[in-house]
Image (cartoon, rainbow, N blue to C red; front, side):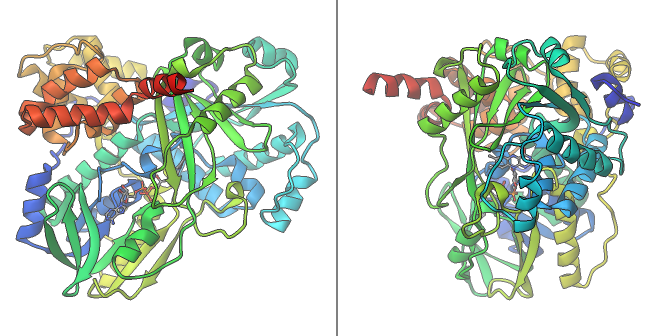
Length: 592
Ligand SMILES: Cc1cc2nc3c(=O)[nH]c(=O)nc-3n(C[C@H](O)[C@H](O)[C@H](O)COP(=O)(O)OP(=O)(O)OC[C@H]3O[C@@H](n4cnc5c(N)ncnc54)[C@H](O)[C@@H]3O)c2cc1C
C-alpha cells in the first residue's frame, strides 16, 4: 500500500535512463505554419480550437495517420485550458449530482495520466476540513433525486465519508491509489495547526495535479507533429471566421489575411466559444452555457506552509466548493462559478478577489492575506452545456459530441460540448472515433497507455532521477539538469544539449530560468507574443513576473523572433497590462 507521496509516485513509476532520449519535434513558427496551410489548403479533418481537447484530438488523429489540421484564434492552450484549478481529479463532488459515469472515467483518466504524463501530472493529497457531523445527509440524496435542486445544507462528516467511500471504490480501477482517511479534531489540529478551531474533522484523499497544463498541451502538439509530419499541421493566431466556396475561411490574427480551407470533417473544439464559432460560420446553435471561474495566485509563504502540501478543498459559507491549492511555490485560490456572456472578456473582478480572501479567512482565520500578496490573476469560462435555470455548480461536467451537416465541410461537423482537463484523452478518443467513422477509417493506435511528450522514459523516482542526471554527459550542473527534468520531463536531455551549445546565464529576474532556455522556447515552441512565453511556455506569469522581468525577457526573445524596437515596446506594454496585477490594485486603491 502506498501511503505517502514518495511511495505513491513510485506506484506509478516509469523508470528509465536517457541513453536514447526522445527528441521533441520543434513546433512550426506562425509564418511557416501559415505558409504550409496556404500551400495545401485542405485536409481530411480540420480542428477549430487548440485548447486541451482540440490538441489531444489532433494528436489522436495524427497517430491514426489521418491528414489533419488544427487552428486556434489565439495562442495554444489560451482559453479555458489555461484557467483551470490544475486538478486532475475524478470530481468527488460530482457524485452528489449523480454523475457516476463521469466520475468513474475521470478517476481512470487521473490514474492513467499519472502513468503516461508523470513529468507533468503529480499525486496531490487533498484535505477537506469539516465543521459538522450529520449535515446534508438527507439533503444530498434529495438533491441527487431532484437533480440540481438549489436547496442547500452544509455537507457534514457522515455525508463526506459516504462520498469518499464511493470515490475509493471508483479509484480501484487502473491504479493503486490509497484509500481516504478521516481524522478527529486532535489529529487535525496537530497536522494543520492554523486551521480554524471550529473544524471538527478532516478527511484526506489522493487526487492529482497538473502543475503546468499549458506544457501538457505543448507536449501533445509535439507528439502530433512527430507522428504526423507534414500531415499534421497546426497554427496559432488563425481564426475560423466564415464559410466560402464550400470551405472554412481562416483569418490570420496578425495581418488579417485569409485563406479558404477544405476538409471532409470539421471538428468544432472551441470550448466555451462553440456557439460563437458556429455563428461566425453561419450555423446558429445554442449548445453552450459556460460559467466564468477566476483564481488568484498568492506569494504567501505562511499560507503555503499552512497547507502542508495539501490542497485544502472545502465548502464555503455559500455552499460552493472552493480550494486553496499549493502549486509551484505559490498558493492558487479559487474559484467562482458565474454566468458569463462570451462576447465579453473573462476577468477576475474586485468582488471575486474579496470572495477569495473571505474563503481563506473561513478556514485559516489567523492568516492575514491582502492584495499585496497577489502575483497573478486567472479567469476563464467553463465549456458547460446550456443549463437553463439550473444552478451553475450543479450543471453536468460530462461531455458529448454533436454531429451536424455543415456547408463548410464535405461530410459533417462534429462539435464537442463540455470536456474537462482531466478527461481530455478520453474525450479526444471519443471524437476521433466519430471522425474516423465519418471517414470510413479504422483506429490503428490506442492512446490509452502511450506516454505523452517528455513523459516517455521519464525517470519518476528520486533514485531514477539521480541515475538520469549522473548518466547525462552534459556540462550543465546537476541542479540545472534536475530543474530541466522536472520542467520538461525526458525532453530535458535535448534541451540541455541546446543550452550547452550557446552562451547561457540565469535570468536576473527569475534565476530558475536561463537565457538559452528562453531562446529555445521562443525558437521551437511557436511563440508569437511575449505573453505566450510568459503565461503558457513557462510558469513565469503564474509565479509572478515584474516589469523588469518582462523587459529582460523581451530583449532575449527579440532577436529570435525578429522584433524591432517598436515591436519590443508594444509587446512589453501588452504583457505589463496583462500581467502586473499589483499595478492595477495600486491604481484602484488610489482612485477610491
Ligand atoms: C475556473 C475553471 C476551473 C477549472 N478547473 C478544472 C480542474 O481543476 N480540472 C479539470 O479537469 N478541469 C477544470 N476546468 C475545466 C477545463 O479547464 C476545461 O473544461 C477544458 O480546459 C476545456 O478545454 P477545451 O479545449 O475544450 O476548451 P478551451 O481550452 O477553451 O479551448 C478552446 C479554444 O478555441 C479557440 N477558439 C475560439 N474561437 C475560435 C475560432 N473561431 N477559431 C479558432 N479557434 C477558436 C480559443 O482561442 C481556445 O483556445 C476548469 C475550468 C475553469 C474555467
